[in-house]
Image (cartoon, rainbow, N blue to C red; front, top):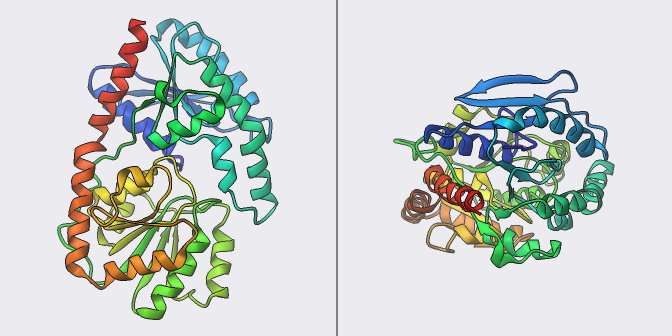
Length: 371
């Protein structure tokens, strides 16, 4: 597998690659992962039976993908004789020169992702330009070299029309969560809070969330909003809380390690996913797996998981008032919170475990190997 991230790095692709690799290894398959390292020497480690190579990465934007690709291909050439197939995870993964069959899983099409990037400074402007201009040709090259293209959600498959792909020829393999680790709490703390988890960056709806917090706290001044994560929008988000006068109601925890993160999920009252765009976010599945009632924007992968009013609530994107109304409804109704949370957990157990995703992936492997 080749991906831009692997734990302990942040991001959605890293945990995906780790959990999938771990599950496949448990079933007797040998897995090698190539990912980004530092700007120094190549390193190798074994993580839960998975061979993980970290090759040099230099953040020389916008040439970083091509430069990284040189080191990836150098390593891959030496490993190729012992491999059966290559599984790439897009976006921002360099193309590979190989005669082996390639499967590419698309987590987020950058051409679509770029449209939802708020431009608030030079960094976010550069990020949007790269996502809309630099990355799409790289993605197209990956797809053209792949025997099979898969996606984490049906909505992503449909969005790949913009690359000239037929959605009906794309296999939806889904996203997963470790349901045995992300479990409902046996008991909760007395402190009530609304939780956000994720990277603090463009298109995550952070400023809608802060506006939502203002509405909610005007109704219930005892409630807190807890934000877990870090990223380029951290300081601007903190500044927005001061401008709206809710800095005492919103707590920024920064990066939270996994064990503490799970406890933070388990003790939360409501979870929110305010994104303007998502493929199929890990944080949504993690919260639901912990039995949390979730209020999420009605975008892409979110609406494939949540049935409004059944296992969560969907609200229009960029609508902090509607989000606040759904949050308040859950805060004021204990029975409803329990009902929604239990239904959320059942959804995960039925369709979004790593065993289920591994089954889907193995079917894909078998299909391209038989071809």
